[in-house]
Length: 254
Image (cartoon, rainbow, N blue to C red; front, side, top):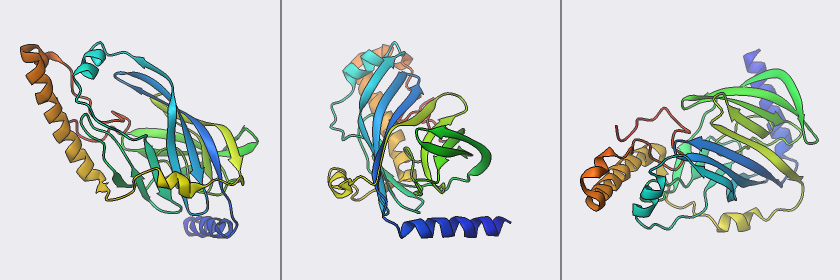
């Protein structure tokens, strides 16, 4: 039965790959961290070949950490491009551009999500969606996808299902993304979108984690040099642009 399911999935994806499909989906993307809650808008541009999940702007942002204003004041100036996640269809590779406390990097990550598809269904917009669950780097996620849009794309690094993910959330309420507007088979100039992002010379995900720690330690030295003795009392254990979204990586500062 397992092999039959794999063959069926392959036939579904192969059949639809022959039929042109493209479009864009606007997502409301929310994330809770120790510094506050951020609700953003992302647009997913896709076709039969690739997809780009591109940051469009923040809707709301609240700060909970009393040190956040101080940290922003002493953070070294750095230029950063808008966040993006690029994927080739039916590939396990994701290229994205995370930030550390000091720099922004282009990173190639290998994602192999082991999805379990359930019988539950619900309607999102005009699309019947099926439920799927997975675990990814320390969190458990539920996704709702539709085979009516037969591409294996979704928000951020989430993909690998026989249909577009229209909603996804973790079981702790830390991350959630849902489609707010869907445009299918409407011409999207994805090449123009790709021209606006940098896919060149990516480092590996492991290399990024190492550099993230190096940058965090360097950032701590900068703070200590600017603030003196009191700097050691600042809580700097959380590092990275998506702090704690992927939580099975070792913290750099204790």
